[in-house]
Length: 71
Image (cartoon, rainbow, N blue to C red):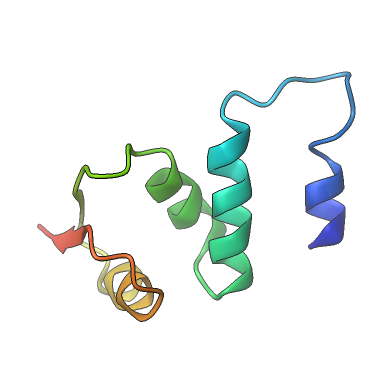
């Protein structure tokens, strides 16, 4: 995981939303799929995140992320 975080430091590219990437990496470390975590972290804080993915909903619930809802 340290390797992924170190990719954020070089100056040869720019991260669009560094805070979202850092949050996604944290959730990834806690067991969430990275792509799901990045999508979820990219949504503003109070916005509900609707998904068909039952696994994502379970993982989000386990992590205390209450804004993930079923479609």
